[in-house]
Length: 255
Ligand code: MG
Image (cartoon, rainbow, N blue to C red; front, side):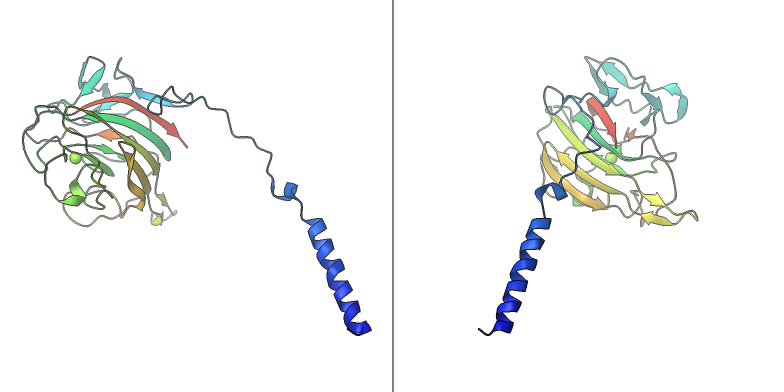
């Protein structure tokens, strides 16, 4: 090695030492703001301390009848559970939500009859900006042993995306959805800026993994977005002839 190359080697050693001296573990530590303290529920199905309780078995004051949003919802409240009343129709939350985490439990009657879409059909509309069936439906149905189109199964985003797996429990058992909902956003001219996205755990099993919705879920036709803001969460009273579905333990954490 001549003196020139010794010089270059020395220079490289010095600069690398300097570089290592500059990088410290503390450089990549974030200390504030600190995450807010939230006390978890006793189990993962119990509401954490910052949840809004939408139904805990005592009353329906967080809900209204979709046909008359000035009236309190009047589904059948009994034994701490809420059972669909098909004569009353759909119910929705008084509150409006944008992005949130939702927990909701539902039960298909043990004596359920019917087949296909006419067997325990209900649904959780994750946002319901307008009247009627407009909105984004996470399907509720008995698919323990019931064949239907796969993008209409329990755990599907109706007519848009089938569940990743069939995680149904048998009729008579309580089942749960845990949902992370990211609302769509719109430009000032009403055009879509970002699509709605949803992640769903069905009985603790991942069935929707950050799925981007194509628009509201439609019975017939291709979905298309229409601009809207914060919206109620709606529960479906489906017109099929089968025995009605029940709900319990509904809570939400706006994000
Ligand atoms: Mg439905």
